[in-house]
Image (tube, rainbow, N blue to C red; front, side, top):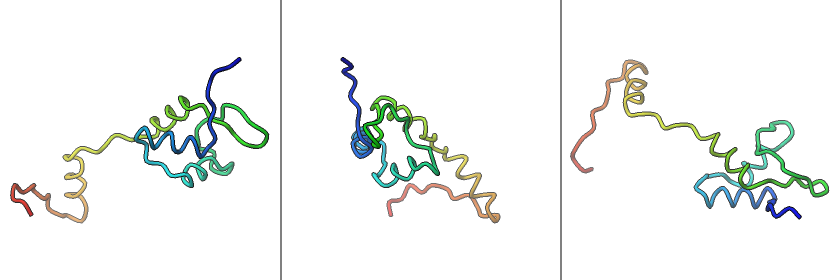
Length: 94
């Protein structure tokens, strides 16, 4: 008997949110649509309902995370955008 837990799409969305991945039910539904086909891998089917492996879904979600931009790259982007000056951080509370 296989003890691996399989989850529905709604359960997977809740599982990912519990682990810090900010994804809504409807966003996950859209990513899993056949036209888009960018959702987590389907582990099995129960009738017409896809079931997902939690570990595979978490790996899928983590692979979609992009690294944060550094402050330097944001300042360079601001400087090149319409000749805007680079804003210097202020030590004064606002």
